[in-house]
Amino acid sequence: MQARKVPVIVGVGQINDLSETSPHPLDVIELMQAALAQADRDAGGDVLSQLDFLGVENHMSGAVAPWPGTEDFIPHLLQATGLTPTSSLLTPQPSGDGPVFLLNHAANLVASGEIEIAALVGGEALRTAARRSATQTGQSQNAMRQLLDQSVRPLLRQYGLITPTDVYPLYESATRAAWGQSFEEAQRETALMWSAYSRVASENDAACIREALTAEQIATVSDRNRMITYPYTKFMVANSAVNQSAAVIVTSLERARRLGISEDRIVYVGAGAAAGESEDFLARDSYAHSRAMEVSITKTLEINRLQPELIDHVELYNCFPCVAKMARRVLGWPLDRPPSVYGGLSFGGGPIGNCMMHAIVMMTRKLRGAGTHGFIFANGGFATHNHSIVLSREPSANPQAWPSDFDYQADADRLRGSIPALDEQYCGPGQIEAYSVPYGRDGRPSFGTIVGRSADNRRFVCRVPQEDQEGIRFLVAGDIEPVGTHGICVQADDGYRTWRRAC
Image (tube, rainbow, N blue to C red; front, side, top):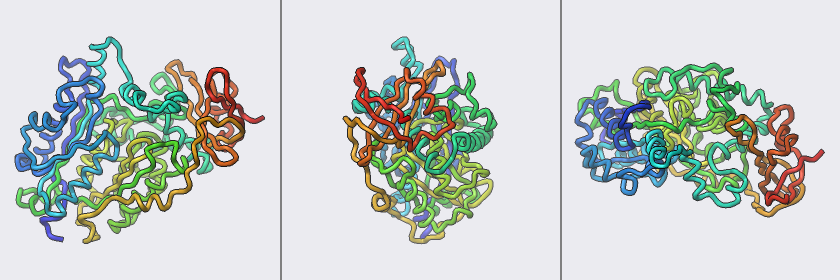
């Protein structure tokens, strides 16, 4: 492949604004401006002045506490940075797969000869947004819950399936049962992985939490580590209350050499693969797997002619444990090897859609120092959007990899099983398919949400009220696996459909 069409990464930058007391905490535009400047310096300087394409990951911060640029973001960013790209692209929404999509898209533009220099950037300032909102309204707010609650359909609002912390436990419970794990075994796997994420973050100078935690600290409920939604403690979930930004500069190999960038600073971009599940998480074939995830990971290996045992470093997206644990199994990544290069969303930081831009930054730095191949798996939505990609210190083993159509949705659709019909009014016997139990700040379960299947395979949603202490205890005790057990869904006087366990 001609050097002028080989996409490479030549500059990376990231920033984490940890200041709690600054009279002027950074906003999204200022964060992105700082990350872009750092990436430009990393590439040798004066590279962004020659920019052809700017890709921007969308953000959530402005919807919480609006500031200039929320409605028409890229022009404000260009004005602040002084950049003059020929073209630009803002992702439709903040989604965890967005940075990998932007990298794959930019690499395709280079490989097709349309551009020679691209910059990718994103960031969130939810910490700043929370401060501004508190100043304006006199109270703090959960930004994600507030925004999602405005658009969620009534059934989901009624039964408490609104935010990722409500929904991902459905996958956790279903995968645990499918893999034949006990509660203790599943928590142990999570704790070991999350301890490894924390160790990686402790060595990342832009991480949010730079403290290496033991598996016991991750798994044990404490004042520092309260239960959020069973079985996830605070240390196990994404840390989105951050001010973070990251940026990446991509060029052609030929342009990199003309810029005088040394070979030991160049990281090659391999081809990627994307596929998704239904946007409606109640219209999934199963909560025990994701065919779209499987296709994204396996196709990326296939088109790069790469075997898992040849991978030196990975980033397994870890908004919640079930995602990283599913991805680890698909990739065949051993439990005793680090699952991250930046520290993941709990410790490295979880700036909503831009998390994996930080992973790309750290993967680039990691490969400059050691190893040959890095694999990045990204996920967005509610286990919905999947996009994987390979970075390497050497050109792709597949000369036909670029440019590449990374849409493998048809493959995922062919593998997917039948999707059960949702019956929003169902009452009658059934069995538990998956469940979620959110906890209050007082450390007590608030209620239980059951996703069940009827005898004729209809899917339904019902509730275990807080007053049903025996029913709640059954869901969270960990001595018997609730998934697969039988009961009955009845219409209660309070308007909820309620689950009663069969004796």
